[in-house]
Image (cartoon, rainbow, N blue to C red; front, side, top):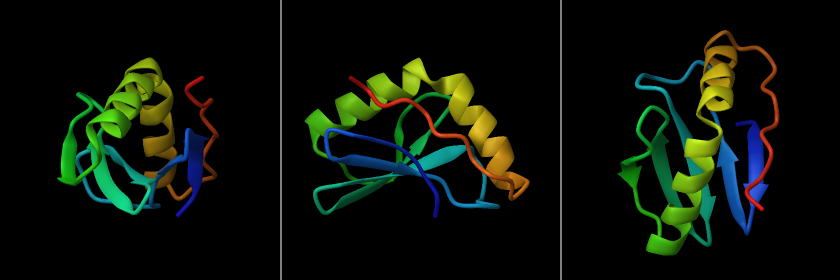
Length: 86
């Protein structure tokens, strides 16, 4: 699963040819979650409130890039890195 960003110990990844709705995967300190792209919300899993806040802020800033990577992943093409939250 390609890593598309990493910040504050949070790893953001996308699977190739993954199922709808558009989403990304997050790993942080033993926690895992699937986050929707359109309206950043947890679809499955769990993140601490702090990590979820950081991920939500990052996802809102990079929604168009996430959707572009989603389309690339569905086409099994190389994903583009997305800048981390600073």
